Length: 574
Picture 1 (spheres, rainbow, N blue to C red):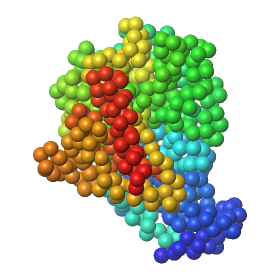
Picture 2 (picture 1 turned 45 degrees about the horizontal axis):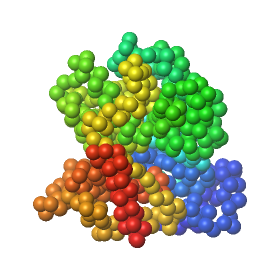
Picture 3 (picture 1 turned 180 degrees about the vertical axis):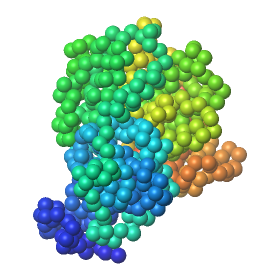
Picture 4 (picture 1 turned 90 degrees about the vertical axis):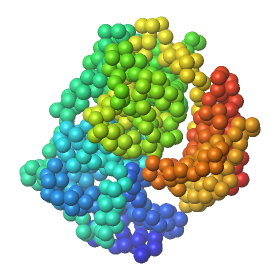
């Protein structure tokens, strides 16, 4: 096995690597640390596909790592049989640097391997790629995106025939194929014009857009009972949401949707926002300014690939209050189930799906309507994987969500969807406005009815190779040394998802957990509060999710502080 220096020289001497890439590599020839960072690992293909910093090297996103991953996918599809190749692969891409080029490289490699490709003509939201797979009855799909990461990143996500992201069985098959490619010279390419002539490449657009839009609008539960004059500020954060979100809201009859002009059009540098993550309230700076000028009632933002949604709501003092993912999810579940119940659209086989690190408020609301909640590991690949499984049992899917501002309803998209979420959030706000309520009022009513569920989710960022090692050590040590009680609140059970075991402290019993193995720890307390600790799968951080429950807001907030202090003390001691 080659070390990083040998890999660096291999790239420099390869007849396949282009001159521009070689010049980039020569520019770092005296920087040992940079060479090491770029070549010590190969960019890892997991169930989330690839994600990394753009640049030359085996541990970077570039045309060669994308081509190699695609050859691995092509080999996997062809191994499954001719019918799989014939059904083809749908490909979409976002606004980022090299997204278009990577989508074309992927198309070139797939078609060279005899696999049909449906390539979008221009940028599209990630959820529309999920829909396109189902629309064309394709075998697979690829979206080129790094979601909400900074401008230096790009990524490559793979989907399977149901329209959801690949799970480990498919990912492992593709990974093994990638590892078997010993040289870039083994990768096949076909000129895209030739691929079109051979009917292996179809450029897609309006036809798919129109059907996707029609189906999004068909999900509406209420229409006549809405105040469609509600004033909404929308920002796509220079990403793919601008056209589809505005189109859906316009066709639904919302008359006062105002777009943040500086963030309306594609910008791969995300100049006005830097870190284009709407979960971070700093992303709302321009929206808040425009909102105050226009006296808007809600501000909504989608991330660059438009699969996630965040919202801020105007309070009685004219200030904008951000809702986190758990709160937005609870409001959407409350609105959808309340409305469906009123219209007799809930039967006894309904379900929602949430991740294990998402709060319990949505679950409690669902239970009050006789709707069951299923839990999965983090990531919509797991949420929609569970949805796929339950739909085959003829159960009725109402909603899927996770605390990191991802939501979906309906069954024609099998991933989180910022277009659907934007429509439902606007619909809910417009409905409650006719009742003289804001979304903040609705949230308060939910708390009064079900209890004050609060959350404090934070990350400890540890960059580089040293950081990776620290994160690993933190998880190993926390398994042995975690707080047994927090003040006088007793720990009653915990789950180690890596061991796939639940430990019942009160009854001194262990039991198996029916959730796939993952490096996550979760702890429950006697008052209904709980927290989870896990390393991020895509970023250099350890994530902590704290959920408290109290009879009052103050009680719940105080518990959050106690839990955070206790957890941080233990982690910082490691």
